[in-house]
Length: 282
Ligand SMILES: C[S@@+](CC[C@H](N)C(=O)[O-])C[C@H]1O[C@@H](n2cnc3c(N)ncnc32)[C@H](O)[C@@H]1O
Image (cartoon, rainbow, N blue to C red; front, side, top):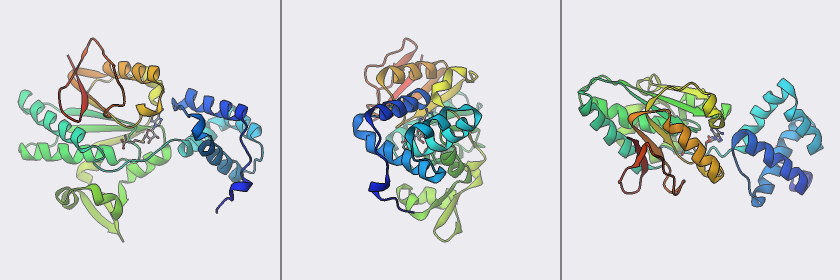
């Protein structure tokens, strides 16, 4: 159904402040004044689906008890930016591939490699990493012993990620070599990620704001791109600090280029690689 603009009730400044505060407190996402129309449209569409005509009544529904939590989980899917694509930032992905190859050498080909993709959206990012990692193990003549955990706040995006089925257009950024190897045609113009990769990736719902409540399981690499950029600077730094505690010695943190400036941590050293913003745990 198409809603006409006229039929969307106007969000007052005070209501915008209330809704954007809720989004920032619960998801970390900071909306500027310019994004008021976006917020208004998304909230109003959901209100229409439920039969609400007043932002205040719907707000009470969202913040009220267990049913409010369920409604919030649905609404947040509409408010987050899920945009992603395979091999979105190729230099970062290739960098991880080279580092894993070096790790295998150092570890005498004997250890597993654990990677965490934070804010993984509908799966394209962790699957891209898996394609590269799988090839690294294969080229070294080894059984793949890597595991990737993808987490995201959006249950809807995670549903797509777990199914691992993508339309042909989504494959336009995938090299022919990877297409042939890791995508199986399942229906008209639909391709599923091979179980070679799906079996190595686990997708879990997780809000990065609650990172300090998550058990500390140390990993070899954390890949977090195009997520921190929606947060205020102090929050970005707080989350990066929490990532450090979840990295093994020698572990890598790869973020989006320029997403955080001037962040320094006594346990982390910036890696000098062109076009990549990465840090290694000392
Ligand atoms: C723009 S997408 C980026 C996806 C992928 N990392 C990439 O670079 O292509 C941002 C993702 O972060 C997720 N996200 C937003 N707030 C989050 C939070 N507080 N905790 C975890 N994930 C969050 C969104 O649901 C969305 O899937």
